[in-house]
Image (cartoon, rainbow, N blue to C red; front, side):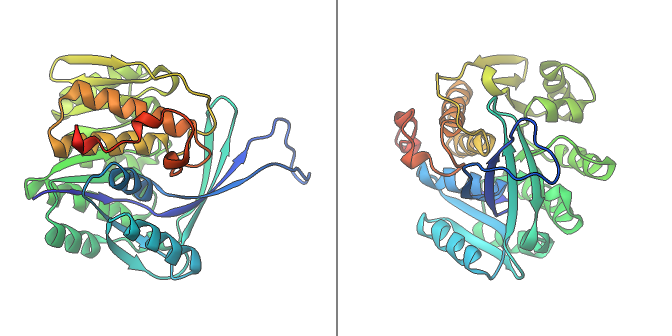
Length: 308
């Protein structure tokens, strides 16, 4: 057993600014960015670009966008297990200057992700770490696949990392998310997701509660305040390096990628927290979630961590 298998979505992101005072029926002009994205795609991209061994189980359309995305990931060395058909998923991300973002997603071919695909990927790839991305919980078939991935991976001796992905879950999604926690070794939520999973109002207390209830470690993403590690009676905090905020879309996925790579490589938890915070902050200084290699900020973070 070795590399990291990511089970998550592949999307094309369209990033647009949230314009103050927008009204229905009016016309507005703004600069838009079209980017490769999706929770699964972003995590796999960052794993591969850091020199990690990565595989991805996801859904991808047979359209030109899907073919281009497949070539991109394969060119980075990501091993792909794909459910193919229909159109590639598209996500519209409306972002504010303060870093808040609102997503509207058309999952497209991601709805084809199922237990059979996950079973094939785990059996063939034999991962040491499996990342389950919570965006799968929004659709019935992928939701079952996400739970299956966590349960089977844990039973096979792999370490399970769960990134909830979004906080406004319905009752069914929340029930499945909590069931996934029973098979999870490392939880990587943001503050709102932690509060929803725990049912309490303070994010640090929520992380501590989830850690104790499910016997797992929590890497808590705290936005502009950095990140924290909670678990096994330990609390560590890492402040983010200074950066000119451009777009926070995908920064959480970059954080999850570093945590997953660190788990697979046996890094010390303090180093994982620091490196994950640095890389997530660097992505927030980019226009797109996968443009870190071309970013002009914090270039030192974009090195091959596996050589350290």
